[in-house]
Picture 1 (tube, rainbow, N blue to C red):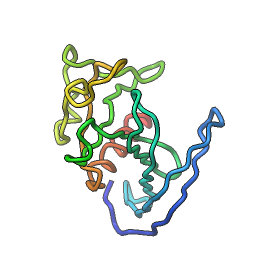
Picture 2: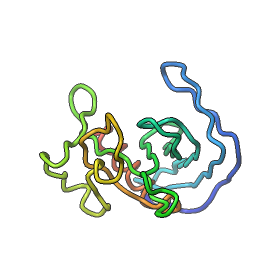
Picture 3: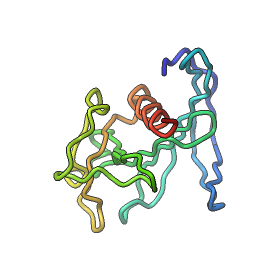
Length: 155
């Protein structure tokens, strides 16, 4: 997916999940992207939510209105500005996580910065998963992950 230009930005983006849970994101930015000759709306929304027992920055990345990736703040976010997104493997049923350190990281993630999630989030219940890490201002990496996940789902 090639990012062509910024299409808009604003505040108070509201997203309703399929289970009817409504989340509000305090800020958002929308880009126009190009893939396979088609134009796409790429939106990154920034909010806060309770993740692993702490109020953390949360980032939702949508392509054409559908969530493709979610990121949340690492424990050291205040100093690093970094957010994490679990690597999930598209399967016949659901999307199981890519287990850290047991599973190999799929080749398609080679261009992205990947870490073991338990090395960046020390909290009860943290998944033992590999995760893509990006600075909260690194929109290209977040959009690249979303596009990768969209391509996996579309087969």
